[in-house]
Length: 60
Image (cartoon, rainbow, N blue to C red; front, side, top):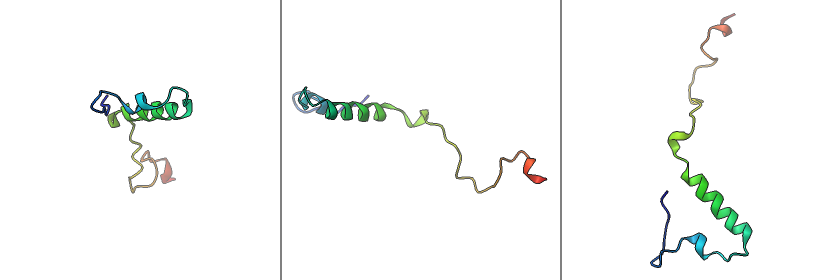
C-alpha cells in the first residue's frame, strides 16, 4: 500500500495525537478503503440498456 510520508518518514496517522481516537479511526478507515483494489470490486453491469435478465421468462 502506498503511504504519503514527510521528510522525517512520518505518515499523517503518526502526527495525530494518541488521544484523538475518532480522528485516528477515520484515518485508519480511509487507509483501508484505499487499499482495496478496484479490480476486487464486482461490476453489476447496471449500464445495460436492455430490460429483463435475458432469460426469456419475460416473454410471456
